[in-house]
Amino acid sequence: MDNPAATFVLKQKLVSMGGDAWIEDVQGNRVFEVDGKALALRRTLKLNDTAGNEIYHIGKSLMHLRKTFEIKKGEQIVATIQQGLVSFLGDKFKIEFEGGDELTVKGDIIDHNFMVKRGEVVVVEASQKFFSLHNVFAVQVAAGFEVAMAAAIVITLQQMEAEERNTTVTSGTSG
Image (cartoon, rainbow, N blue to C red; front, side, top):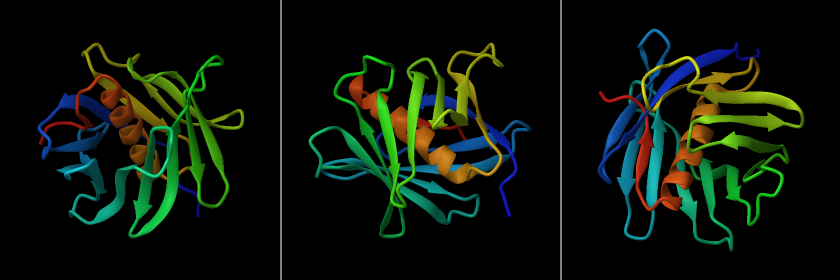
């Protein structure tokens, strides 16, 4: 059964190293919890369901030359997100799934206006255009693409950009 199209709302929020945040749907219902944990060498995030069960574990990989984050389900790496060395054509990040699927990211992550594409098909789109509030943006997920994975990807991209700016960021709404 395919996942239906979905939209969730994120509020960019600077939090402490151990902070938590909520991701909500457009009606304001909590959908996912982002649990921020700090380890000695790297920051990790957990994407949990509303009952607190871990869906994905997001952490920085120290095994790559370029900045790379891993998204794990249990102990299994299901996706890696790697920052490009140079972004002449606007592809700053590459997302690779363990099954061989590959996605690219186009747009402006800092301003929350970007698309995640599988080939020419947009599977995730983040945009502030529907909100007048600063740092609030919608994430639209195409039908058939897993909503929790979309949230994990967006959170990871935000964390990678935050590290570029030497800050720590978790995406979500305060709870």
